[in-house]
Length: 130
Ligand SMILES: [Zn+2]
Image (cartoon, rainbow, N blue to C red; front, top):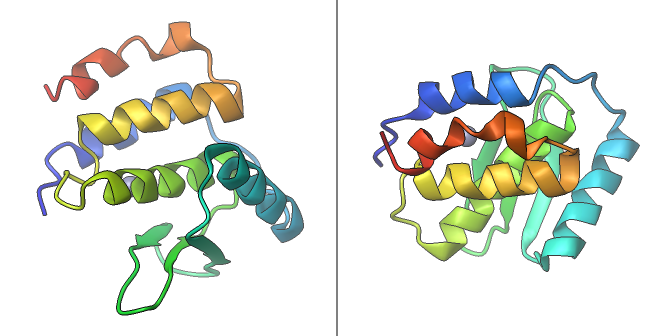
């Protein structure tokens, strides 16, 4: 799958979503539930990773429900992986970190994580896929 601007997205995120402390697992589950309920997402599960390099999104596969596996338990990591689910459900052929993903993630960060829209103006280039 095309993932042409993954590192650009990661750089961009580090600008508007500065490092957050980890939540405990209970807080992380509450936040996940809150976001899913608010967005009407009923077909996504969350688990935790204790090792490895990063968090992951696994789409639904042969009856196995879609799942996100969170490594660093921050609000932003959870939002990032949920945004993958939202985009995958919209169209599984969209690029993982393409313009649609960035637009979704930024909107979610503003609504659920207090991101300041004025600090995310550079998102324009990524949303336009440049
Ligand atoms: Zn990602």
